[in-house]
Length: 247
Ligand code: NAP
Image 1 (cartoon, rainbow, N blue to C red):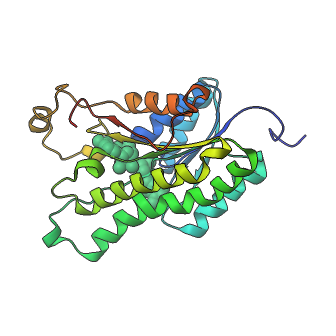
Image 2 (cartoon, helix red, strand yellow):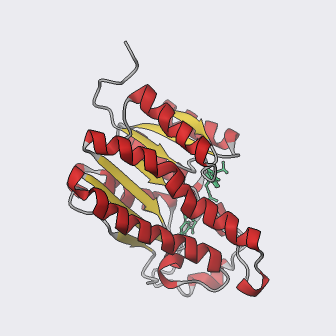
């Protein structure tokens, strides 16, 4: 019998699942019975550890290495999922980088790498997945944006632009495919405790957050889990802030 092509298990793909927020999302999706493809780019060992933890807790999943900035690699990966499982029910576009500096010092490559990963990565991964969701008349797409994309952040012209672009893409795509029972939403985390915030002045930043603390990856994952649910079927084109009241 060909693997799980005919059963009802939902198939999910989480980009950037080797650590941080992506790891928490993948773990939460697996804990709720989904088969989860964990994408990573360079952190193979970390991704393997996440998958091992998922499997030892009774979950199901597989690793899928590709670079979201590479269109061919990304589309090949989506095709691989579809040929193995027949569908993608849930797509979480989480992979992201930052490369902060004042714009006057920014070189073209600092701009381009952030746009390529955070925004073009969304296009590279999502297009074929949407095609499949349209044919199945079901889908949940959640894009991980940022407070920085909502307010603009000094020192993050590249990052804010990429995350604001992701919000625009979320809203436009939501309108294109809402009739087919596919929702597209964004979450906009504030400061979340992951490697991405290494090097930031933690105590100073905490004073600016009404909740007085950073958020956790599992708090982001919990919101995403709800957006993936059947009950969230009427929520589309929205941006949900997870930011301790900062905005
Ligand atoms: P993180 O700990 O630095 O993890 C980033 C993840 O993205 C890693 O799994 C990394 O995989 C993956 N990645 C980076 N470039 C990739 C590429 N080209 N192809 C495939 N995967 C790639 O960051 P995080 O804090 O968990 O952030 C996750 C998302 O949340 C990002 O989109 C980020 O912008 C957003 N966010 C974070 C915060 C925060 O405070 N932490 C706030 C707002 C929004 P490899 O290591 O394998 O390359």
